[in-house]
Length: 98
Image (cartoon, rainbow, N blue to C red; front, side, top):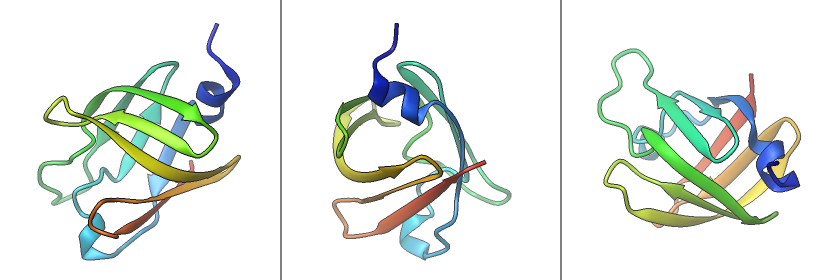
């Protein structure tokens, strides 16, 4: 059975950040227990989060398997209807539950 952190991510999320720095993140994310899939938006090129594994280490730490299969750790703020993170380039990215 998935832990409570994973269950809180499960579902479909839509990116609300329009900043150019967030272009490398998918327009839509779908999380299942332990895995995710990113879907590009219209005209969007390669996405950094394409498909792979993820885990919430705690309520503020998300580890994602990226397009290069590297496991990258992000500090996140997770609420029932949205989550946001700041990447290593200081880009703030927000997703809302679809």
